[in-house]
Structures are given as C-alpha cells and as structure tokens.
Image 1 (cartoon, rainbow, N blue to C red):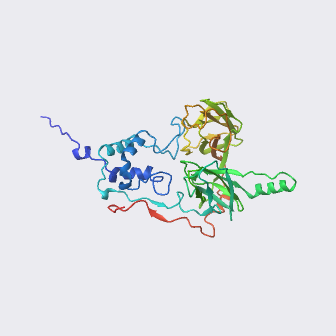
Image 2: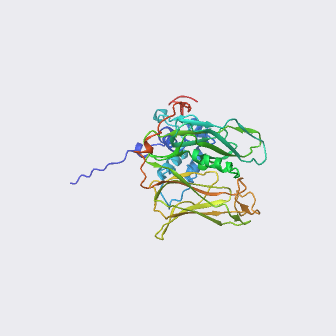
Image 3: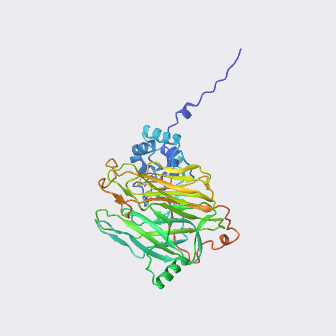
Length: 431
C-alpha cells in the first residue's frame, strides 16, 4: 500500500483579507506619502486610514491605470534608480482592498509612521536662501517673470541636494535657479567697464521647481561646487488664481560631508529658433550638444509647455551608431519629473547627444490654448520651450585627494531647517 501525503494550503492564508493596516499603509508609505501629506503638492493626505478611506475607489482607479505614482519614462529605453512604478502585485493589492470594502484591519498591524522634516524633502538644509520679501500676484492678467538675486554663498561648499520650495504652490508656475560664480561676475564687470553693454544674463542654470517635480539630489561622491561669493538668482513665473495671492519662495541646500570624487556638470539641449505652424499635430524640433570629453550621464529632465508631445535623448556615437538613451513618449506638463539613470550611460569623447521633440499645435490637443497661432519660443505658458537638461560627470576625474576633500560639512552658523514630526497618529489614536 502506498501512502501519499497531501499538504493543503491553509484556508485562512489563502483567503487572508487585504486591510489598510497590514498591506496598504506600507505601500502608501513607500510610494505616496512623500507627496500626499499636508503642505505638499498632492491635493489630499494619505497618511492614515481616516484620510485615505474616502479616496479608496479613486486610488484603485489611478493605480490600475498606472497614472499614479506618476512616471513617464519610456520603459524600452534605460533603467532608473528613482523609478516610481508599482509592481503588478502591488496594484492587485490596492484592487483587492477596495473590492473588499476598503477595511481598516487591526491598527496594531500598522507600520511605524514615517517622519518627515516639515517644510523640506531633502532633510535639514545646511543653508537656506529666501526671497527678501513676498511677491504679490494680482487676481488676473499675465504676470511677467521676476528675476531676483538672493544672498551670496558665504563659504566654498560642495552641494549634494537642492530644493526650491514655493510658499504658495497655487500660483507658482515654475521657478528656475541660476548661479553666477565670482569669476563669471568679474568678467561681466570688466566688460561693462570697457564700455560694453551691461549683460542681463542670469548665470548658469542648475535646477528648478516645476509642477510635479522632485528635489535635486546627486549620487554619493558627486556634487556641484559653489565657491564663496556665488550669486544665486531665482527666475519666478507666477500665474493668477482668480484672487490676489502672494509667495515668498525659499531654496534649501545640503552640503557634502564626505570627499567628492566627481563634479556634476549640466548640459542644456535646447532650440530657440522654431515656429510651430497653426494646427500642426506632430511638429519636430531638434537640438544637440557635443561632448569633447569621455562622460557618464547622471540623469535628465525635460521641460516643455502645453504643446509638448514627446522628447527623446538620442546619442550619436563617434563610430557611427545611434542609441536612444531615454525618452518621454507622453509628455505631461503637470508632471515634469527628473530621471536618474540606474546604470549611468557612458559617452566617449566626440559623442553628440541630440534632443528630438514633437509638438502638437492642433485642435486635438485639449491643452492647446490657441491652435490657430504660430507658436515660437517664449517665456509664457502660451509660448513654447523645448529643453532637455542633462546632468553628467567626466570619466576619470577623481577629486577625493585634492579639491574634493575640502570645503565639506555645515557652515559655521547653523541654519534652521524645520522640525521633525510624525507622519500620522500612532496606532489606535484618533485624528
């Protein structure tokens, strides 16, 4: 006689219900709460069951459609360390939770609440620069750009993280940060002294705040150098909201503590000389940047306005072959994300990196403010900008034993950076 042992799965395990406390809260912590909490860009808080429960059906819809968390990089080109996409099994958990009536479960199963530094997503800043006074925006009209110089850097420092933080996101359309280092500023003074026209150049672009954007942070060992006397200028673009409002934006900086191996450099791949015809649904615009050194790409970001349709970064190598390094096949003005390469692409000297964009100026573009207009480069939302930002380092550079080992750590005078507060009440506590 043969005896066969058969092991059956536990019915309780097979049909274990999905609850907020046990399965959903950890997913929200990992993927959503950085934005979905008071004071951040998202319109509702998802810090606890009481705040998340009214939005259960909406959560299921947006995660099932992969609209949330937002992610627009082409999956066919490149891998990214900050990829926000949910795995299918995580999407399925949200669906099962909602289909079961979105139960809370046992509060004892809740994970420990995350702690966020109130007011900042980069941790406690080492240095904060703030607009000298609030800017008032009227209830209606087109608002010209504000170019405002902030205080100078008081000491040489390597900067690892930057966050531009509007006080009033309701009217902040976008904010660009430029820096002009002391050497560049002295050249400008000399030109003016010789009778040259005073230049209005803001300096070199470093980073920006845009709808749906994320903070700027670099891999360990990489940083941007800000010498003493570096002048930071903000270019602020506001939009009206139907009532008079004001804003007083701040910028926070986190400095490197460990020796820096490579300096971060920035290339802007842009075209300023285009004219998109009225009604054109697929107008192509190209721009390029040629590298004279062997480099590795850290990350990219794309900025266009309301006609922006798609953008690809294409490498043309010296040996004649081409490669699409990354692309944004469905550009969304409201979610202008940065993409950090997981395996940093290597570009040998002589490589040309091309930005290839397509614009939709047709009536079929529901965001198009005027499909009858010929659209050119310009600062306002009804104009267009077609810009690809590329952050890179030079191969073979190693500053750890020279300049990269100095100018580290906080400034002598500490700058306050907010107060840590728990992200949600403790298990079992009420709102």
